Image (tube, rainbow, N blue to C red; front, side, top):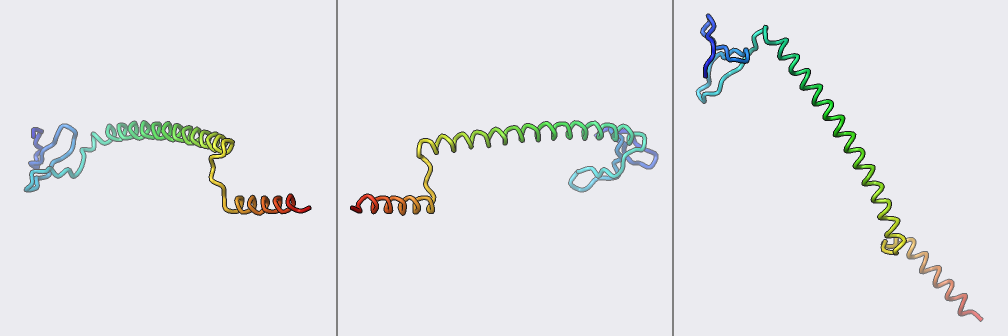
Length: 111
C-alpha cells in the first residue's frame, strides 16, 4: 500500500489517515486523521447525513401512503365479504340468531 512517510516513520495514506503499524494479520490500524482533512470530512459526512434524512423522510411518507391504501382495501374487502355472507359469524351473534329463530319458531307453532 503506497503513501507518504512522515518524519516519525508513520505512513500517510491518500485520505489523510495515519497508519501507525500493522497487526500480524496484515490489517491496518487507523488511529487518527490529519487535521487538514477534518473540515473536508465533516462537510462530506454532513452531506451524507442530509441525503440519508431526505431518503428516510421519503420512505416514511411512502410507507404511510401504502399503509393507508392497505387499510382502505381491507375495509372494502370486509364490506364485500359481509355483503356476500362469507364472514364467519361470531359466537354471540350466532347464539342470538339461534335463540331468535327458536323464539320465532315457537311463536309460529303456537295456535
